[in-house]
Image (cartoon, rainbow, N blue to C red; front, side, top):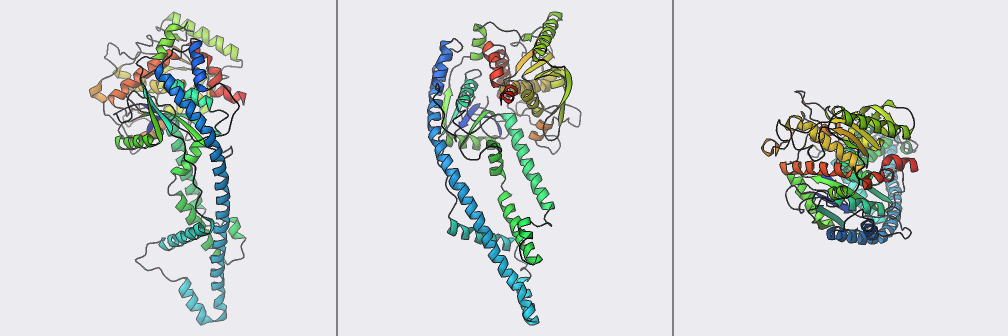
Length: 553
């Protein structure tokens, strides 16, 4: 089982794909929280699009899915008004921030002038000079902690600003989001993607994340802020330009600079709001407007206390909806259509021949020369791509899943290549369980970015995770509650870096899922692999993959 939401081992804010209700152990969910953008021209509604797909025979009617489509369309309507409210709020907020900062600097200048005036008195009288210096530069009582005086000054200044400018404007209440949960293939991902697509032109700031991508970006943003703090501290001896040009003595300027630094330190002690702003809003765009976050797939793992707090918070802000069908619609759709073979098995000469033929066919159409290249990953890391050509890349299973690579590497591949060839995929067993888990993470990212996958494998998709003569892949007793840490590193760092353990065993994509969650992950991987062979999925590659979106822009 599993969950989907915004933080932790999460996956889904707008579409909650979970096999269990929110409060159950190891449930999977998707959530979506509306904040909004600007009005859009009339277009077919989300419910109408859903019904059109049924008429075209691309979907089978499901009452649970229709219920969710109705709720998502209603939410979209509420977001249109909320977008207007947020536009007005952001204008008020910008005006308030400008006035407050202007007034704050004026107050600081008044205080600096008093100190400057105090520093000039000594010239009038040596005795007066000693008294003033003793008062201005007196020692702090030993029972007063360092920084307390500055903290009191800061608070007094903030209270004064509140009385003069008023408190920060209050944001309008956001519409409740949706928290969706249900079985593998029940339509959660599809409905969330339909909703996300429908927000285009209505919502200014909107983001869609899968768990791995979201966690890695959050960690990267936190790292950026911490790094900036360190850099700022190293520059403490230099004064801000606006302070440097003031007509004050050096000591007064140093006091002003210290007050400015202290304000920044207070504001940066809790960096999560700043991380959330960067996480939701593209800094290159206008900051005004609301936001929608579509987050896919949360797992529970060993962080049970944090996870339950998250679920409770989601239930406060989201309407919970079950997609209760037991049908795996990915499999059903695949059975009803003529498959375009991109999954060749078993590993024999014929499969290799077809695989090679398709590689030549697709690379010839893409144009350009087949070369090796280096991809930037994250945290300064890179990944070598042995063969690539204009959005098409080729790897072996061992190269992607048999080495210490992680989710960050797979995200880089999925973002840069709309078509990925993978050869020699084996049947998964306990002996290569770490490779199996990496493979599941790889499939998640390729699916999430809507990549076309072409591969050769030792067995059919259905038999891929059934184990071998060496034994089954799933052994509940052996890893139901396992957790792994690399030295002092948190799992999130190992996940991103794909490091090796001290004994040489790969620990890059080590799961913290419970046994039931692991089984769900296997079923989901099979379901997604099946869908990735269908015309409905393949036809959407050019529409949804980031490679083509970048070229259209």
